Amino acid sequence: MKRRSHRPERLSELIRQAVGAFLTGDVRDPRIGFVTVTGVDVSPDLSHANVRVSVMGSDEEKATSLEGLASAARFLRAQLSKELHLRTSPELHFHLDRGLEHAQHIDRVLKELKETDD
Image 1 (cartoon, rainbow, N blue to C red):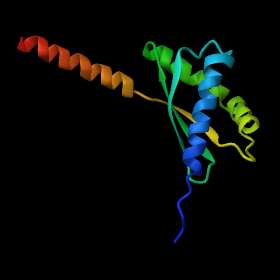
Image 2: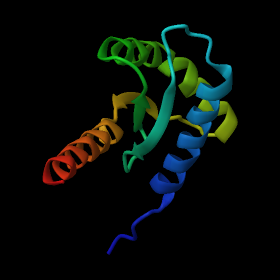
Image 3: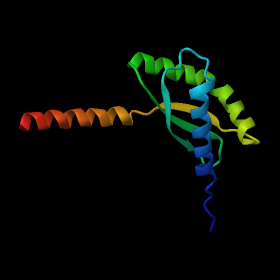
Image 4: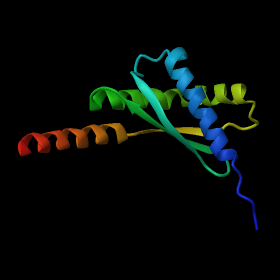
């Protein structure tokens, strides 16, 4: 029976921290707005990483930020390889995480329901 490796989870957290640090300090692309990394999922073979991000702003600003992140993905991959001393760094794929928006929507609906009950 093959033992399950915890390396993808450890690498996910390291990538989340490194990409978050890049976005708070080193980003120079004006397309990338206020972006927060909410999570990273690395494939079992460590070749791909799906980076979930939350972006503040309108739908157009979110799309523009995702375009900027997609164009910065190769640079970020090279930086990760240097920082984390990886032989091969995973290919980064950025996805919009709508969890926060969904939670805010639910909160708004619950407040409206409470107001109508009162």
